[in-house]
Amino acid sequence: MDKKVKKALENIPTKKIGFFPTPLHRLNNISKKYGVDIYMKRDDLSGPEFGGNKIRKLEFIVADAMVKKAEYIITYGAIQTNHGRETIAASRMYGLKPILYLIVEEKPKEFKGNLLLDKIMDAEIHYVIPAQGMGAYEAVVAASENAKDRINELEAEGHKCYDCPAGGFIPLGCLGFVQGFIELENQLKKKSLEVDYIIHATGSGGTLAGLLAGKFITGSGTKIISFSVDKEAPDKIDKISESVREIGRLINVDIDENFSKEEINIDSNYYGEGYEIPNEGSTAAIKELAKEEGIILDPVYTAKAMNGLLDYIKSGKIAKGKKVVFWHTGGTPAIFSEREIVGKVYD
Ligand SMILES: *Cc1c(COP(=O)(O)O)cnc(C)c1O
Image (cartoon, rainbow, N blue to C red; front, side):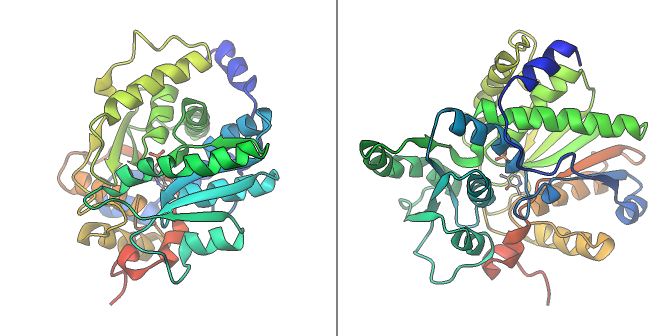
């Protein structure tokens, strides 16, 4: 990577929130079992609080909110949103006041998993009940409409608000995953490793956009495979492509001409019935990783991506002898949530 890119990245304000670099290590037992070298990138340990992939984005987003002199940060998510919980923790570190809009079927009577943490960190929480027939992710995006009145009210009283979209998916936030990609490249180099695939779960698409930009900038030949966690919005690929180009503009790299949508490999065959709904394969993946490696996957994202990865290996889509990095994007608190979300992880 040339010095100009490095400099451009350094010139964008960030706030220190996470513990980076996150560990990269080999999963010895399942690597042996499947005959594929599987490494794990531990963004579940990115801290605080309980870590997760949104921390990388929030280092840029919180800094931006502070440059803009915001007092409040508003964001959105489903009941077990990791992004919401990570945003609240990051806001608390820097004295910003967090407001969370949660999409729920009904107002919760109990607070579990991420929602328990949201309550302990004392965020202002609003519950939004979606229109019938609306997909969960679609509803999260629609929730921003509900926040407009609250934002207007606060601003009329002279309080500046920073509106952060679901998943923290803005090009500025995606820079966190450009850095993440570079961080991984450096770790691989130190281990004299070249990997064939990076595997991860995709939700809003922000992580993927950042990884793709990182891949472009470093000239890496690693293929990125992304597993969906819900029915995809029809414009997702376009939105990601546009973001990759926008990320390039933020750091003075001309990605426009050279980025092809063909680079985006999203597989929607493993999310099952939908967002926050476990399935047989994803539950089996949680149990397998726990039993073989002592590692806990989250039921909403990483379990679905791991099920995809293991199935790719079993079906030969990923050949024996290949090298893979599985990006553990976090979400661990959801394992302490409602049984309908966790799945049948024990008999
Ligand atoms: C948000 C999230 C993802 C997906 O990241 P996007 O940038 O929204 O695509 C994956 N895994 C976990 C645990 C998450 O919380």
